[in-house]
Picture (cartoon, one colour):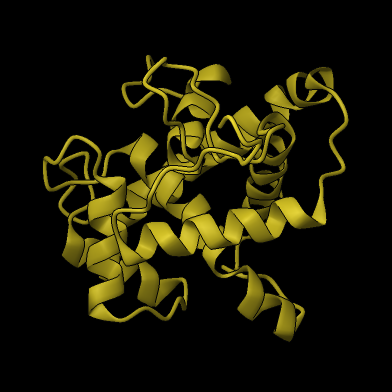
Amino acid sequence: MADGTPKTSSPTSKLESQILEAIISREAKGTSIKSINRIILKFPKIDGSLRKCKVIFEQFDEDKNGTIDIKELKHCFEKLQLKFTNEEIKDIFETCDLNDDMGISFNEFIVLLCLVYLLKEDSAAAHDKSRMGIPDLEATFETLVESFVFLDTNKDEEMDWDKNGMVNFKEFLFAFTRWVGIEDEEED
């Protein structure tokens, strides 16, 4: 903005407000990533870790239709011992179902898990243990959060990679999965 104040997008839901607060909190702490090359060098490890998510995704896609519906998501959270209210589960589901097809695809599932990781940070820090019971995957999510913090240099929650003026953390995660080569329809 003309007065030097960062431009921010207005959250449209309680969940998006929580995501924004979590990102602002993380940005205040800084990041260990110091160059884009460091992020690029991590792509193979990130790619491998995210591909392991496919097994988790398939485990919770109980009807094997290629998407996770809200009932399956509730089972997923129960199995991972993640405590959310029904309203919170609905909000997470709707936030991550970008194409509004009432199902979470594989890429949407990766984003969903990373958002859960981000939102569960404070409660896990108090208990000094894994937030979701998946430590290897959580290390990858930490790298994704740190990458966003590094790339969001003006701290406005926007990177504008698609020229629409608004790139939030969720959109960044979708882009990042494509950058490292993760697609919903993987070739065998």
